[in-house]
Image (cartoon, rainbow, N blue to C red; front, side, top):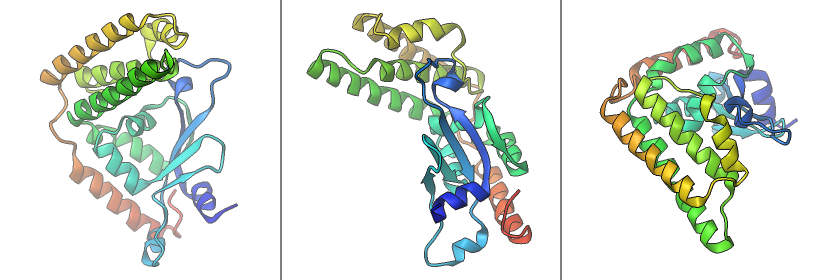
Length: 233
């Protein structure tokens, strides 16, 4: 096992399943996509070679972030990171992992409008380009673009992240199977874009996340790693 994989194995505080299985969109062929957070011992940062900010593996389809990098991405309202904090499929969670998920409200802000809308616009542009070149887009990617827009709208409207697609499941799966026309997909995407704009205008979320609360927690984690034998629990 590599040093990086050992770091993940020994110091993971949270590991969840994300993707189609968490969204309620899985099929028999769906992968098990694992995402996690590990805490590198504070003493490791004293060396010239710093701990990695992220690690792929050791399991297939597994990706983990060091807690500081994870917090920075969460504060920027990165959709993939926020889904880690809300996935119902928790495989591993230490006391620090519980604290991290309890910290979730501090990460949420109206920044989500920019990140969700920008990501969706990028994915839609790629889908249109592929359709122009090859005749059709990657329907799975189109489905997840629409799902992300739905999640972003709910977040801005309610102040909470929704993972399961609920009543939209069948229609989204129809998109994945290529059963909706491109005009129907485009219309749905435009409808969701309008919904995102309206949600932003009336959102209960604060303008900015609570960076101070997150930073104070992160400092406490580093301090505890020094007094707990270098292995956060």
